[in-house]
Image (cartoon, rainbow, N blue to C red; front, side):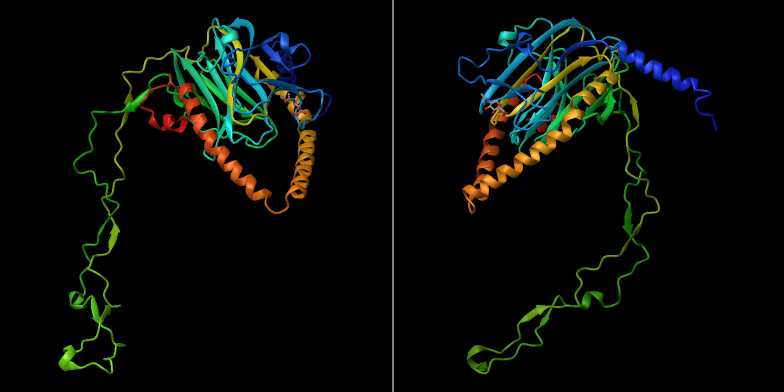
Length: 428
Ligand SMILES: *[C@@H]1O[C@H](CO)[C@@H](O)[C@H](O)[C@H]1NC(C)=O
């Protein structure tokens, strides 16, 4: 055993030093904790203003929080569109890790709506930023009804939006959560919620940005003698003697000729028939495991001739804006702690300094608020309130699902390969 204090492990030392250095050298492209002065950095879009459908942002810590001074921006009007964005010095993530992270809290018990943010590239007229403005990355939670509760991770290439093919469930409660998207130069990615990794993999396999590297050999054919039947009739099994003589129906042994039956007038009495309990249907030999069973035939995989590698599959060369663009049926979504940097360790540290510090106090404040609400409700209307609430909620969901369909249709108009019906269906 090593003697403590005398011979410090050199590997440990250099690791510690390395992580210190790496945090010290983290490059932060954008960071917004929504302190005083945030309004100078963010531009509220005029999108939907002429239709009076543009919602107001509320600068607040919300109804429950860990610290009243820890404010963010919250959607404050129902049935409204929201669009706001901030600019940062343009950069490319080539050869760099890209970290996109923010905190979001749905105080309104979200039935249907998004809590995602976008990264935009090139030149954007921020006053006109809206649902049709092209974006590079869209990331964050999306909830609608009972079926959609997922984290979006959409990457845009050549004007096409590519949805992640893996399902990443999002948080659905009314508390703050941190969503982190990490994109690495080796074309791998991670999605974290509250500093816990929820999904990880490769851009090649988890999006359809490029055609797949390998495909099933279209020339391959199942060999004639390939036996896919797992069970066969037992050739040894024989039909028992007299099996076919068992009738399907028999006269009911319990039936009795009625007292007033008159053979002359009513004809000869016959008992009604019932199903024969001895009858087992047409004879079938029993099944046995097929000794020649080879399993289901699969075509061998070959290199896809359509595949052309793009080592820059992960690169967004001119990232320049971060924005929130949402449609909300029920308002109350609060955003905070937006971070764009090149260092997952630094991002982790920010989560520790912000969300992790406040989460217990926020939960306690929420529980307290819930208790009060329930007390109020039972005072107001001790009998009916629950029933009515539920009806209301269902109506809201139905309406919201309709609205969201219209909205997401525009969201996915430029969507990826149309042969990926499953994803498309999921989205629409
Ligand atoms: C802003 O949020 C606070 C806290 O939830 C709330 O009391 C206030 O009414 C909100 N203001 C608007 C304009 O919605």
